[in-house]
Image 1 (cartoon, rainbow, N blue to C red):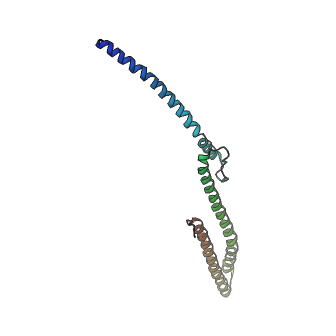
Image 2 (image 1 turned 180 degrees about the vertical axis):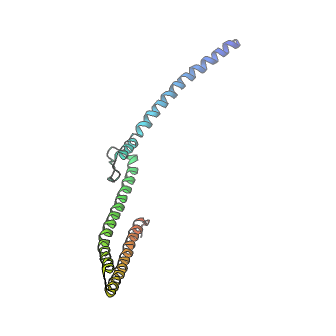
Image 3 (image 1 turned 90 degrees about the vertical axis):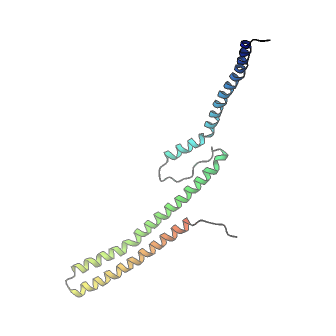
Length: 166
């Protein structure tokens, strides 16, 4: 027979003998999990650092040589997106360049016709200059419609979802 106090002391000793190793093991597991998660997320920290240091116009692919295989899929998708975005920006630059080049001549002609209409002392010269001015503005309107159509075609081509065909 044991006394009630002895039984409680034995129960407390058994609980402490079981609980202390479990607490130590739990703390060790938490530290181990923290180290493993930290090392697993290190490539993402490198990605964040690389992206934050980049020039806003730098759309070159991200390096994938030191990236774990699990993250290479994400890097591949991001590099593909950056390549498509670079293509869109290049198309926009070309469109702006073409537009500026194509608009320079008609605008200069309109300016010349307007100035000649303003300075022409004779009504017949003014009428002729205004007719040429109207013709040039119509021509310019046609050119702008063509440029807008081209821009819309480029936009729709790039934004249309691609589906495989048999």
